[in-house]
Length: 192
Image (cartoon, rainbow, N blue to C red):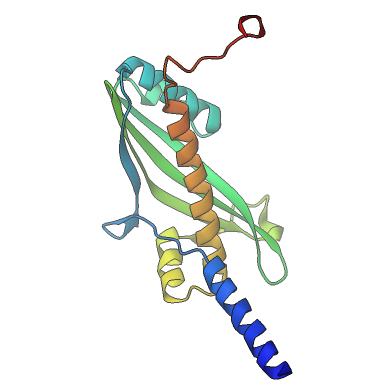
């Protein structure tokens, strides 16, 4: 009886672990990771979308886009640089991972299209935080290794953390460009 109960508990724990394992799927285009989408926004001018996108880029990535106005001379295309960084624990050290990438935003009346690509990663071991020598990492290779073996490895942790952070940045971007409907406005306390 006790062995059956232990076996049942073990089976439940394994099924919960499998259910909790999040599968990550990257959009791959010509063997490269590329996040892209076209978003339609009703009744919003091209100038308004451009201003919101520019503000988001300069707010989120000011250090990477110091020459923003020199690079973006048209009112319908934004090209910028972005980055994300996170810490990753290996056997003995807490390492820093930094991915830099390109952001392309095409702006239209009532719509915009974005593309995030050309990811370049670096892995700084604890002793290398201030040095320029860091191991180069490729998110496409990490993702391929993740697909081969989804167990908890450095690749798996790096791919899942990368996916989580890039998804948050894309959601932040789309939220910044959303327009609240006119019937949703803040009511002051004197109007209630």
